[in-house]
Amino acid sequence: MNMSKKRILIADDSLTVLKSLEIKLESAGYETSTAVDGSEALAEARRLHPDLVIMDINFPPDINQSGGTWDGFQIIQWMRMTGAAGSAPAIIITSDDVQQHQDSALAAGAAAVFQKPIDIPHLLETIRECLDGHPQAS
Image (cartoon, rainbow, N blue to C red; front, side, top):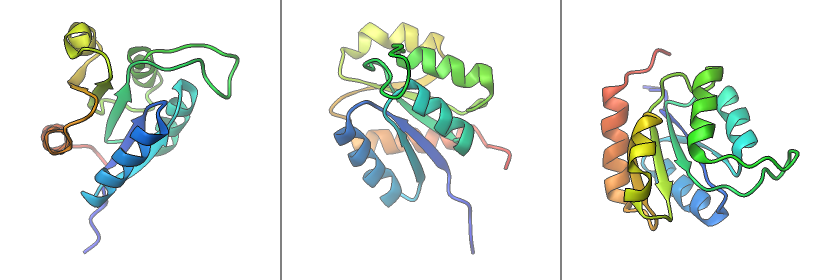
């Protein structure tokens, strides 16, 4: 029985965060893809058409591009405008105080905001709720 795995795009400039989330999510049965900056996140979203996006807020200037700086909210808005992530729910992760970004996250259409270090069981539960509440057309 080959059920297609739900695809999750993880965007964070910390390779440690990317690797640990990738391992945890794949062991929970998800297919993952990672990105370290805004342009990579958009390219991956176009390629993957993720069912859910996990997005950091703060990014340094893009590594591969002309040095433009994006924040996670702008990246999510671009994904929506270009159709790369469609209506896939987004979960924001940040090392900042969550309260500081709650309003912006909700305005950007984020389903939840998590502060680093991330509570993995709570994150997995939130991902399940998001994906159950947003059935994707395949």
